[in-house]
Amino acid sequence: MSAAPQVAPDEIADRIGALLKEFKLPSAATEMVPRLLAAGHDDALATVREVLEVEAEDRRQRRIGRLRRASRLPPGKTFDTFNEKRLPAPLARTLKELARGDFVDQAINVLAFGLPGTGKSHACAALGHALVEAGRSVLFVPTFAVVQDLLAAKRDLTLPRALRKLDHFEVLVLDDLGYVQQSAEETEVLFTLMSERYERRSMVITSNLVFSQWEQIFKNPMTTAAAIDRVVHHSVILEFDVPSYRGEEAKSRKERSTGGAPAQRK
Image (cartoon, rainbow, N blue to C red; front, side, top):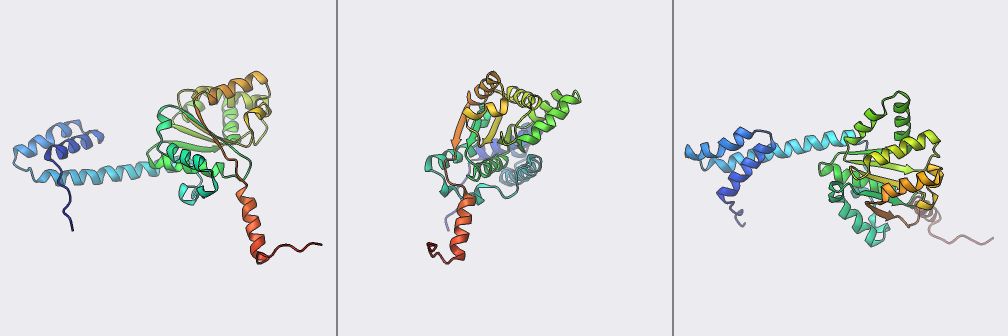
């Protein structure tokens, strides 16, 4: 068995200092290593670093747990349970690239289009789970639900507070945009939400309506154009141009029940 690679003392010391700063212990970050060295405890540095690494990982897991509970992401809808083989290779690669989370730092939006049953909601939920694992704050919510919440807040004169609460999430996943036809008031608060997040926070939007059909949502042509402009300006577009997986499963069940034999002609 080969020996573990040796880590330079300076690297260990730097890592100890970085971890203590991460734990918001600035005095310890400045004093611990010099005092241990002055006391002749050079050999203790590696052990100190190991203990601090354990603490760092424990804190990371606790934070991920909090983020996951707050995210409302559907349990089990991860990339592990997502059949990416159904997707075109470029789309599967793009999803993997997005899972790294770089788009969040640039407030880029992700727009997923496709007919019902093509897997766009599962894929975007899986993306949300991956971002949570990376320490990002995510909220997954059906569009109609967030619209109703904002509409109630507007009626209670607390809309700014409700928008600030949503602003705490780096990524807002709006599932099924356009699934429910919006009234004028509902359209107004949805547009306000998009405008508030524009160039500041990322949105991941799934929809079975392409842009040419968004006037069904926003009613007014000018509002429709303004909404599209805001979400598309900095965006990645994912097109789920694949058959419905529900239809494929139904077909498979039928074939299994008939032993795969072709149907007899009448």
